[in-house]
Image (cartoon, rainbow, N blue to C red):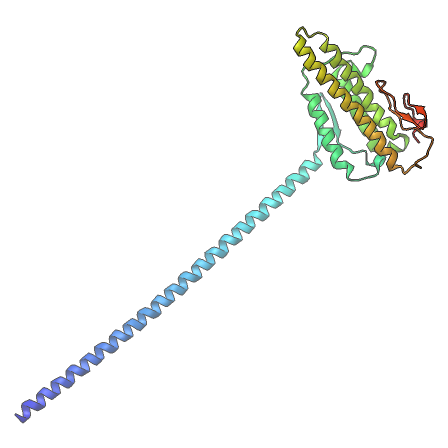
Length: 257
């Protein structure tokens, strides 16, 4: 019995040792697996971060390239900002030398572009035999371009504000009269009323525009309030403007200095 008992004890000890070894191996495996998982997670995180950084860099590079491209296009557009219409090419130049304000450039170029677009879209043209530059669209547009160049090429010291206003308003007056003559051909009374309303609208807008231009120029010159120099209309005879007991007639350069 003694030997059998000892053998049993030895077997139990061996089993216990085996169990301990198995447990240790399992723990090591778990630890190793956990470490591997952690390493994998760290690697994945690093890869994701690298991908995100690469994507951000690519996006930033794309934005930079687009900005550079836009700037390049804008510079190219600015350099090539010229009009070619009816065989006439001119660079858009503002009357900064006349008005003395760089902000005028943007408004002028926008107005130039709009004017040129309207002229280029005309399909018909009236005729004014007694006025040379109104014989064709080409002569009319060429005169406008020449006037722009005259002002822009440092010749503005010889040009007054009333002269500039008169240059455009005289031509506008002729064009508005064309509209009035065309209305006479309308056979429908309702259409005639509509066209006449439109005619009166553009006529009043032209008159108001001239008066506003003269008024703003007057106050910009900081003239004395009780000055005897009247502010008058240049070329519109529909109504007159009283000023200190005087009635305005047509304007010349001498009464607007």
